[in-house]
Length: 464
Image (cartoon, rainbow, N blue to C red; front, side, top):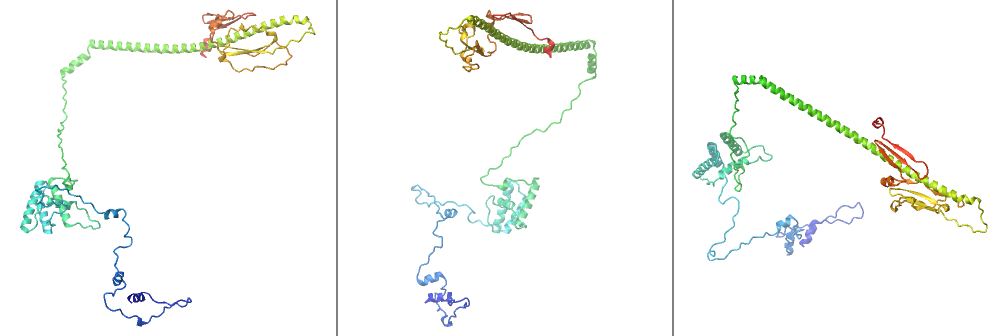
């Protein structure tokens, strides 16, 4: 019944809307709105009251309470572990109660400072102006004496000093520009104390006192006061000055000084002369070295030219010998008639001959039928397989039926490195040296000898 009435009070009945024009709610009969009887269940809108009326048990949990806490919440809700105290059982400890752990904070029975107590403390500090521990002990003694006489608590040691310095360390409150009178008077008393000792405001270590902090020790350094500079007095007297003047104008002293000066000047002249001679010798050696280099270059050029002339002479001699052999073989054949019944002689292919010199370079030539009696020992140089280079095997520059003594290529001579062997050969040119002139005579196998005279260039052309 109560639930039905509660629902009727909370909700209003409205007719079903057939169209957009019907928007008025259905009127409720006032007879149905009867007042509820008085009893313990008057507030039926509260969920807890409704649950009690139904005989249900209300829950203590709220939404999200089943989840475990996260982060800091979990650490705060975790049960704290208590340290266990292990006691050793003994006969003497059976009757003693367990000792309680000491806690920090204000000691039991301590009270705060009142206005009268602070005023009396400031008055005592203003009279004594304490600087060290003796002064603060005197302030403590007078303050405790006044407290006993007026019914205030007796303060422990250093409590009054810490209270006074606490006002000095008090910072300005945020948003309030007015300074409390106690703080203001504490700063005034501090100025009087500094004026008494003649000090200024510094970062005092005592203002940040701590029981665990050690006192700062100041070590005195003894220094000696600077002494005034000494005044040097002239020790020269009139007699000494006269003696010095007489020694300076003495003839023997002047003569000795002149001799020493002349000796030094002669030594300097000799040093300069020797230095100039060394320079001239260096210049001469440099010029001789240059001339030697030029002469060596010319000598190398002459040796190369000599090698070329020698090779040409050998080639000309070989040509002359081959021509004589060809003419001797061809003359009898001019008047001879070929027998028609004789079979033709098979023609041999030309043979390529290649001579490689030991000092570099090579000479290649071809031998035909008319040069079958060619002597391979004519060339004294033995061919070396390590200096060979590719040369075509055959050269078809002429027709097959044409007759030729031989086909040769231009030799490629190399640098002369076998000068001793060339000069030792009887067929090689023999040079003769006379002074700065070298006379070279080249005698080929056939023909007249050739003479070459090699001399250095004139000085004017060399200097140019």
